[in-house]
Image 1 (cartoon, rainbow, N blue to C red):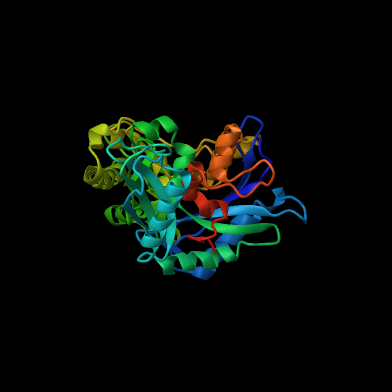
Image 2: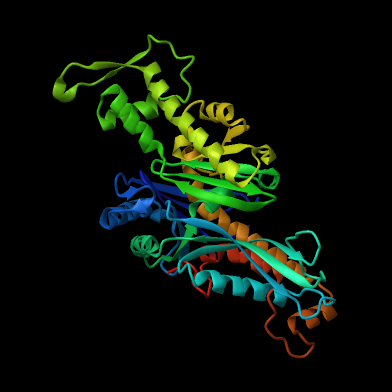
Length: 448
């Protein structure tokens, strides 16, 4: 159990959500407070277009969780997310001939590759959010996540780099500065998809192959995981707002009524809805109410979602064989609340599908009910990833502590009489993927 109280801040196209969470005595994420504010038209397609109003929405959401923050002398870490089609997820490989092919690969050698890859990529991409190592290959040996101790003439390191448009990141940074107070510090940026994955996907799914589809109001984020690694991710300018636009146009009603109909009466599949089922839409300024067919509403929604399913299949096919995704699809985000949406995607993609509710709990019954909602997946993931990283760090420290004294002295420079700073270990490399979440990346990837 850890007593750190961590704050997550999800800045979305329709809402800003904030949560305060910590680990309970069973090691599970427990949510102590939630906050939410409306942010319509201030973030379009995942990108901030109105700084003042977005800042106000952040402050409103954060104020709603302030009652659980500790006293005057306490500081709490918070992490936020960055999304939008400007996010680029790119593979990058670096290989080198080794000085001595019969000498075992060392931690220092791997870390040197990692740092060189970061420098090379950053030369052309000034705003790097994350550097994800996805595998190493030494000589003719099979690919591995841990090459330490292997021998061979050549070593190759494969990475996925996630970068953002600097100006878009700067806009978010300006808004996050407003969230800092005497008690809230170190606001950093994290790619939404990776945070969301930490709250709704399990290790078996990521190992066997899964596609995470986060359906927001302004964007849809698609992330493909295989062999417990991120294989590909992209952000589409396709969101629930497009469905609302279609409803408004197709049923000739106002935008507000279209959104309300979608949320309260919408369905992803229309086949079992009676033709006779109608909803009365209030008239303008007391005018006569207008009947709207619920079946026609569902037809409009279904057709737009079928389009997204086709886009999804095309995107997956560019990067992997869809048959290899044994864990299928996990649908999350606010759009995943539509009834039968998992059934529709399963039918039109040929992949098993489930709804991804975030894995968290609360001793407060009202909060426990509220967070069992896919729209909370990202904000909960921003807190969960902090604890995931702490577990990785502790496991690596434990492994180091249990190593034989002679091996430790040789590898890290420790001596019996004068301890020195340990050399980086392989676990350090994999923790680099969330340096910005931890707020301790000296290179400052995307932190501020």
